[in-house]
Image (cartoon, rainbow over all chains, first blue to last red; front, side, top):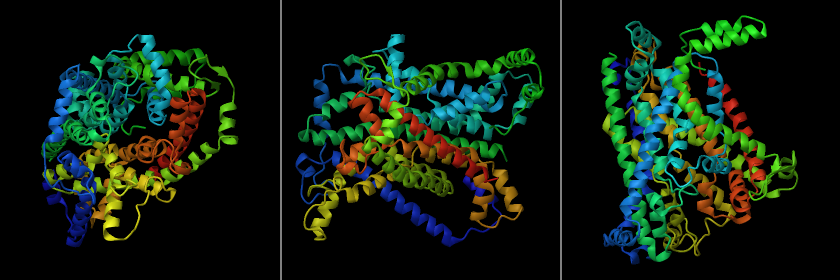
Length: 289
Length: 319
């Protein structure tokens, strides 16, 4: 925790340095958040203000019309919009859970065990990160067709479990944060390898899997189903919303509302996770004193 | 690869020179000895093989064929690769653009991610969580960057044009996203704006994970200011994460396509923002020439691996 860390530092930090850092962060924060604030402002503008000249940043007469229009359009959808929402949540939760579980299991062995084939797996994971995903779509499709998974949630969820980014990330953190001596003493006390993984390693690397949850969640939340989900009642929410805003200029206000609504869920998950990261660090910092 | 390895048994076994039969047996013995490890890696490795490794191998194979997704692939040997360099002028433009784009966005985004993570890490927890959200927010929403198309819209309704016209700096709207003078610059700006993503979050988590006792020991050993602390303690402890971030930067910058296409359209003026990845997608999904598209993907892959090796060598000097 920073309070402990700052207190433990045995040297003075220059005030000028602090001021400069503060200015850089403040300026950058404004630049980074500007387009997001803009997106939110757009969503609350009446249609005529969206096309005003010269363009205005903030809405002059804020309105909820865009949102009520959107809900009206959603209500007309012949597959209930809640079904799309369920599809999205199901895919996101199952996909993320499997990704974290299988990824961290594998990462634990890669970081803390030594066995024939380990280097090969490590290298394959590293290299696969650098192969352009979009040429893999066809082989991927063929695999799905062979497995008879086209038009099922599995076509999206199961490949998400094989996402390599997570393993690589978890392996780095386990390698770096979990000390061998800790595992050794647990083994002497009779802990099984699974205990070492589940009860010792996972709590220590909580920041890593919280980060992985954010990444995986975000990836799958944007999922539109593409060529793998044909049936309308299996399509995820972003697909349904993109259909609604496909209606041209007249739907500009609704489109702005959609942008905001699609952002709310990942941002909420992000905030919960980041506060968790801060909290874990707080406790483990004290425990380490 | 990993720094701490407990049982050196396997390594010792492998070093002992033995006849082939014996070596296989030793390998089998040590595999049996480590069967718990295989239970751990098993589920992921099976999934990874089916959904990642095999598709990649198929795609490498296809790169030596002509495959239009209707007829079965026919073998053309190095034909696709030769066509790419000898006949496809747009590909060569794409190569030039990609290298330029990657040379700027790769290192800059990497440094931005680290610098901001490092600066934010010094703050109090609540402020840190809030700023992390602000910096990360552009990557959180899949299409937040589309705001920039409104900003840089070519008509008088675009924000930048609107303001410049209003102030009298220009007297007619500039076609920001159609004029090759500005296109690449704007695209780079937007991509950098979105670049505080995966690596940024990893760096923050990584900085949080550095053992406090290292800093205490450093202070005793005579670390006098934050630069020395950064150089002698923080960076060496972050080596794993720095390599991870480098790979993310390399893949993002060399394989960029989506954002560029969304900003400057499917057929940018003079191909000014056309990248290899866009060329891949064009051949793969518009023209259905999977063999040709795969050949480009293989070349791109080799480029990235070479760059990654170089970066790894650079990072190895951090000790």
